[in-house]
Image 1 (cartoon, one colour):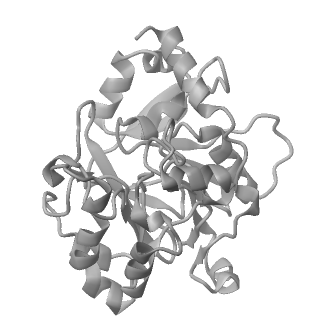
Image 2 (image 1 turned 90 degrees about the vertical axis):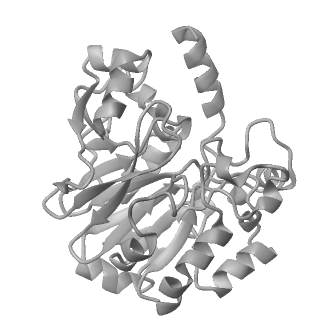
Length: 330
């Protein structure tokens, strides 16, 4: 696809995204917000919880999408996190989505006010993999938009190769809008004096790059973030043991059950079902040490209905559906 046509199609997908989150009630973990703020200046803000196609989904008028169009509070932005060091006034974006304009606003509003700069940029972008919901927002750092200079982009070696060799992303490299910082799975690295990241290689549909999950560590607590994975059984790590190591886990919840996908081969989905995850992690959830929430929700997901049976089932078993604007103090 020619660069001009590609950009035109992408910009069309961003239209009208400003309508959203100021009316939503935010969920905070730990629930004792005052105590959490006194203990740490490290905050993870959930900027979106939808699968790559967004919610409502483009061109879809299923029951869920109709409800999301009718009620903006029912809609969701595409899955992303902001990692904030409130003491150092630094913010890192975890995945650059097609909803990046709204999501940057959300993140900057949580930083201590800085009125000196007309333009504001994250201090770095961290990428999980090369599917459209996770990296295409990088285009807004190019010369047509923010025109950043050597913005740090943290990614795997294979992801770097994909971006550097394919337009329009290669233009970000040649014009020095971005500068790569390579991540090595299994090797922890610091973001700030208070925050570190531990990359985890996870199996997924890796057509253009490999796929990373992350353990985000603050001064008090840790959060596991895996928005995409083939299945828990395909991983060379135990998801049970990994969740036990952290205080919070935001996990791939793309589909609730096969009811959403009649006739589909489960081996071809590329995501674990929430029902499967509930069975796998039920003991961890019941122990109560680790708060487990599901993110990256497809527009068909039965658990999107807050009054539905699917939502009730997972909440009764100690799990949560993540929400846009959710906050975790680490």
